[in-house]
Amino acid sequence: MGKTFSRPEALSDNHTHYCPGCTHGIAHRLVAEVIDELGVRGRTVGIAPVGCAVMAYNYFSCDFQEAAHGRAPAMATGMKRVRPDLMVFTYQGDGDLASIGMGEIIHAANRGEKFTTIFINNAIYGMTGGQMAPTTMPGQRATTAPVGRNVEETGMPIRMCELLSSLATPAYIARQALLRPKYVNKAKKAILQAFQYQMEHKCFSFVELINTCPTNWGMTPLNALKWAEDTLIPYYPLGEFKRPE
Amino acid sequence: MAKVLMKGNEAIGEAAIKAGCLNYFAYPITPQSEVAEYLVKRMPEVNGVFVQGESEVAVGYMIFGAAACGERVFTTSSSPGVSLMSEAISYIAGARCPAVFVNIVRGGPGLGGILPSQGDYFQATKGGGHGDYRMLVMAPDGVQEAVEMTMMAFVLAEKYRGPVMILGDGMIGQMMEPVEFPDNLYVPPTNKDEWATNGMDRRGSTSKNIVKSLYLDPKVLNQHNLTLKAQYERMKKEEVRFEAYNTDGDYQALIVSYGTMSRVCKTAIDNLKSQGIEIGMIRPKTLFPFPEKAIHDAATKESCKKVVSIEMNMGQMIEDVERSLKGKREVTWFGQCGGDIYTPEEVAEHVISLI
Image (cartoon, each protein chain N blue to C red):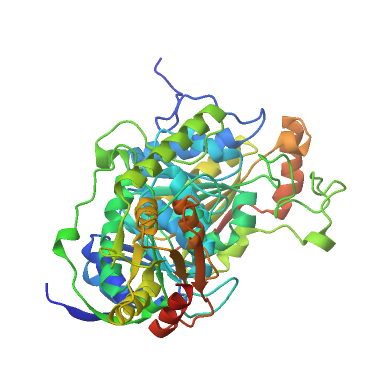
């Protein structure tokens, strides 16, 4: 019997530092599989954010840059403009992209920059230890919202796919989740589609992935999956929001 | 090449192209927006890149991303914009990427004004961003030198793998002077395969390159900073540039001045000379590394009794002059920073009042 499952070439064999039950590992693997399938590892450059994935460069086996907090889309713009032949992806969390980096992502998307953004939404700041994010749900507890997010003071969670889809510039915008095998397969398809649009120099491409953060949610991994399904998915609906055609 | 009459801002843009830098990212700000207006027309002619970013914050990182790919890249801005870019400059220094920043300085703090100033001396030479980094800073005294220093900046940025700044001012950006673009200042880009994220295929390699500034292990971070420090120490040995003006004979006082202000001081020195009064001047061309020895030696000459730092600010370079003199001469400050520039007569009058 031949080998049926192996590590993608674009993924390194380093152990990740991610917490048990975190879905970053799945997201990394899907991106790596897509890079392998498209055969573009030798001309791919990833950009790590500031957040849990700050050391993503240790887990991929392609060139990588490390951005300042929220600035990955500006760096990707610089790269794609001077080297349009490179395949460039940013990998950003919700604090990085939807809070401090809101300006950079909106304008990169609006210019129609030909790179791909993988947006990891786990509704909390992970690396700094569970503070409230722009994506934190109403009533959800965080270290800076100890009795739950008060939307009277902090507003409602930001839906990035919907926000970016409102721009008139053509783009590929999709949201998927990494909570069940069925979702994971759809997430893989969305990432592949996003990279393909980049390969064709077609448009900006953006895939949001609903992740779990059992550590900072204070849940077991299984409960985290269930909570995400029950609480996040209804507010952050899955699917394709925009296609360039 | 024949001389042409050009505005400083446009000449700086052309100088970058002549230096082989075909990538420009910028955000509009007075008094340097003419660079962008010039390059938006010129870059397509040379198959280059022009991008107007959404903010100086973003532009700083566009520069970082492009520089990390190993391409020559530059931006121009003015004081408030450079404050916003200073975060990126720190990251670029930490990640060891060559990039060129031009600051056409205007008055501050805050929005300040739009007229010429040298108020960003501290920001440029002492680190506007966070952390232990230094930046090679060159200060042109006119359009010709702005051209030459811009061309040299790309070479020096690659030599030291870090950010280099041209510190001009609104006068240098806005005035027109005859300039020529010296062919001999073009140097082909260095090979950056060892570190740049230019894609493994491009460099025919099977191992990845990572451009980063994060080092969580204290020993590794310390070693990284020692590596950076070694570059700065090398700059101090190899890159100190200055002009000594009227320092051959015996002079009663020494002026230390740079940029636009030094041009005025030269006229004052010439006028005083015709009246039989000898005044010398050291004009730093590099503000970091600073010409400490030249200033020390010129100031401690037997005939020289007074040293004055003449600046278009409230007294910033004077601290480096004091440091250079090691207590052997007292140095005073003469300057203003609202945007008016002292006339040669005002400089001469002040110098005479000292001696």
